[in-house]
Length: 87
Figure 1 (cartoon, helix red, strand yellow):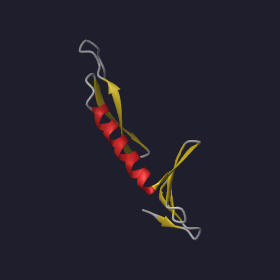
Figure 2 (figure 1 turned 180 degrees about the horizontal axis):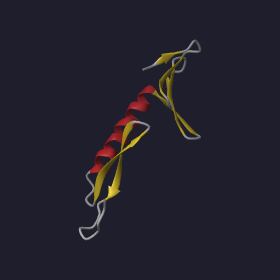
Figure 3 (figure 1 turned 90 degrees about the vertical axis):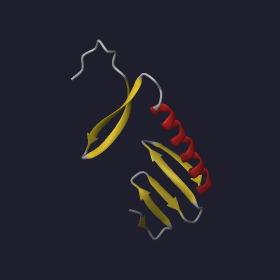
Figure 4 (figure 1 turned 30 degrees about the horizontal axis):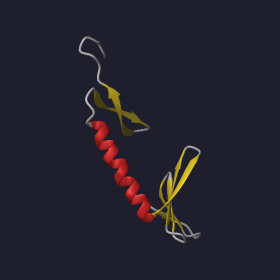
């Protein structure tokens, strides 16, 4: 859910804001910030989504799921050899 503030910034998620004055999307990843115009953001998202789909289809890897703070997360892990035993 977006939250509007009086400074013209809308919190899109915990790590992203939309600055309405500049039409800029700002992402924060740890200590790293990156700003995009709205068009650049959508292009970036499409490229990242394509890469994600390609990664999921790489032979020898499988999608793993786990829970963090009640939220399901996914990751890509190397597929175990048939002779390896995992719990």
